[in-house]
Image (cartoon, rainbow over the protein chains, first blue to last red):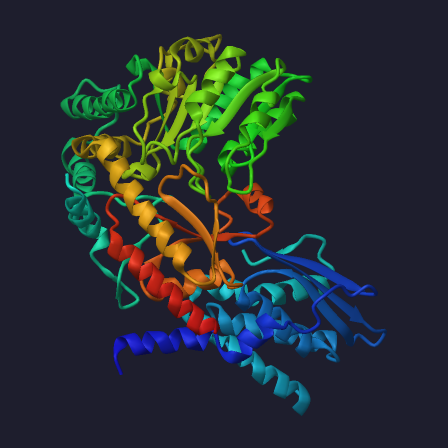
Length: 164
Length: 413
């Protein structure tokens, strides 16, 4: 295999079909009027900006989530996957997923196993589609922006979440 | 030169060999550098001048009686003379050395404009400006109660001149306008703008960060009051910049920062400020950088700015023609007079995704809002992809950009 072909594989790995699909047709895109938690996520470097909405029930489970905003394919796909994953998940487990995905994609490379029932595990497996960004340091923040916003929303932070 | 010779020159670029950084591979592909509007590369002569200074001549300037200090001062002040000649200022006292365009503009905003304005006064800028020519004036408005007024642009990214003239009312205390737009490449008719402002006694600052690297600039011919520019956009080192200011105005302005070098005599009761231009140069300056800037000017003078402008103009035409022919490209900024820059969108691909895919093919462009968010808002977009050329680029660079854009379409296809 030529070097060139490797490079091309690399870029295809970043823009996998699943990512492009979620970027073109993001799930749960829009405002969630009865949200209990909301956070703004801003990537000051590139101007990506999204608002994440979460509705948590009395038992501490995320009943619904949605997002709106603008950004590149990676940040939109990541936000879309996030809303798919966290719906129906207890808040503490959603926080575990936040730590797991940000750890895996950033410097630590840590891959924490999450005790997940089969339907959640299936959704978490889809998140592997984001792993391509690890070869593109300048794009890791695009992939983690929505997750930082989730963390910020669940923690009731008043300030917008940034990836800085 | 015949037409055929000019075409051959465009295919090769006579000056590419002078820039060592261009001769490398990035991500397994030959580097195609199309981001000179963000920062231009440096020729060997600049790199060597800085290294030679560091190895042989470094000491602090304006202070010591010893030989090295004398040499450093000669080199530093020699660069000031070169800058004066390059922009045709009347006197070397009108050339203030700064850290860059941003500092130059802030200096004028705080030392010249702020003491002269208050509630009821207006500061006029344009919709095309870089954040560095917006925020310093906004700060003055916050500090003084003056009002920021913005001259509009049309769909091609050109100033609406009739609107601009009507905004030049008697209560305008300052006009700040860019020579060339960094986001769109629009060349503003600054000479006419300055003449109209002068007729109404409005002081004018020109943000020349994108003008000086690509056009011949003569501050006396322009008749502006202030002209700000950066070293690193004109093939010199980062951290260097220039403020040209009319001597009578600089003379009447209070210092911008206090410290060493800007004083004649200090006691705890009072301080006598140094003469121009040192009054505005507090602290030890970026001596090595300024030495490099002097070498960059030597290099540019040896080629000739009109020759550079002619070559870049033809290469820019080639770039625009190629982009126009490309299915799925929307050009952002289509002014009749442009320099160096062309912004564009490809299909509905976000500019950061496009930037990553191009980088993977060795093609460096700028993506995003280009520190000109109001321009993006004007076009209803969040950002663009921007290719910017210098005289070390050639047709091959443009062709490789086009090939890389096709690849991006495949990835997103």
